[in-house]
Image (cartoon, rainbow, N blue to C red):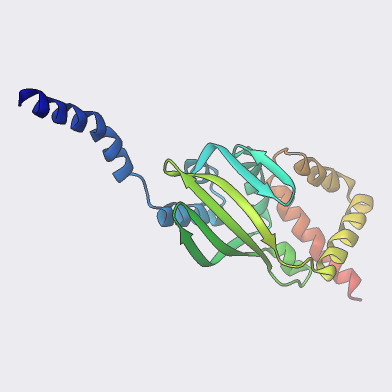
Amino acid sequence: MFRKVAGAVLVTLLLAPLTYAQQNQPSVEELFRRFIDARNRHDVAALRAVLAPNVTIRRHIEVTTGPDTMLARLPYEAGINQHIEARNPVVEGDRIKYEQIERSDLSDAFELKPVTRYLEISFAGGLIAKIDHWKDEERDPVRLQRFNSFDAWLASAHPDVAADLAAGQTGEALTEGTGRKVVELAKKWWASQKR
């Protein structure tokens, strides 16, 4: 009898920390809310707190591991005043699928509609383990034409800013000041195109 009771107590004591940890992990919905809030505040520390150190981020054919690539873009996103809206989230166990509507002063400068992306986020151990851009809206030819024309103009008229943007595409951090400068130049360029 003593062995059975001692065995049951031992099993309970061994499993108690695991059960306690599981109970104290935020829900998938709570982590998702924190993720969206951190992105919209462009808060590096808050975003790092919800991302696993080995988070996998897939966007089209590009796959990165770790949060640094996403975090490096936050100051630039603050500079262009980018905000995201999560629509129609669907929780499926440890995953959420949702529509992400992206608005920014840069898109507004070109008089473009917001971008819609479709994402799936997977959670493990109380953190975001994977972000998968599983579908983007159809490529808007007007958006592509305006951005390509602006990029070409920027490379010839403001090569320093174009170089900063190019460095950001290779993983270097983009600054908030670069974002603000790009929006300012985009407004001037678009105004000249409408004359």
